[in-house]
Amino acid sequence: MVSMKNIGISALTLIIAAATPAHAIQRVAPKFGIVEVRFGYAMPLGTHTGTFVDDFVYEDRLYEANAKDVYKEGVVLGVAFGQTSTRNLTLGIGFQYVAHDFEDTAVSNDGTVGFYQDETPTYRQFDLQISARYSPFDIRSVPIAPYAGVSISPGLGKADFRSFQDEYQITLSTSLDFGADFRIWSAPDGRSFLCLSSINSWDFYGSGDRVRHLQIGGGIKYFFKP
Image 1 (spheres, helix red, strand yellow):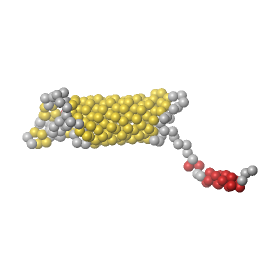
Image 2 (cartoon, helix red, strand yellow):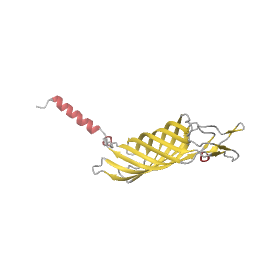
Image 3 (cartoon, helix red, strand yellow):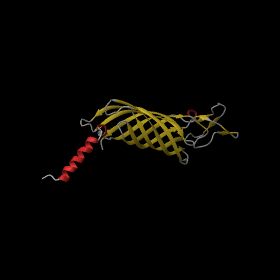
Image 4 (tube, one colour):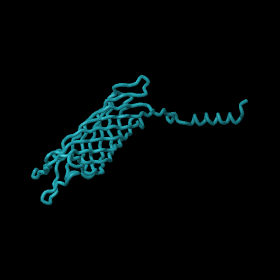
């Protein structure tokens, strides 16, 4: 026998459901984990008044030099782990390594002074990278999805000589990230898929003597349901 209490609870439930707007009942998009492996070129940007090794000083005057006249182009390698927080936003954290050599002679911007180095070291940068990227498209629904975002990279930089090792310096940079994901494979059950990706960034801030870069590269991203 149905009690009056059960009838009252059922009636209250029906009233609440009827009063709830239809748009308030929405299906939450599933979250995907992301594993990213990338590589590319690192092109030095901006100007410098010195390096981790020494300042550009001649006759008690501090000079500026273009980054391309101080450092050679190099390579960048990275790995990251992330998650889709909505259909269009992804958050990630990873590790990045950048390496390139110094030029033999760093020429000042006005072309009047050259700072010669007897031994050209290798610049090495080790970073923890935290990023947020947004795409106007859902890569699970379209084959190509361009994106843009920002990243913050605290890390350690050093100039590595053959004869001795320079001390590490704590550094920080912030970057504009941009690129596109190209979905090349999807699992039949829809629980994972693979993308070839254009992965690029432009450092618009670097602390101290940290080298800023324009990075042009690519990589692979694997999306999966945890």
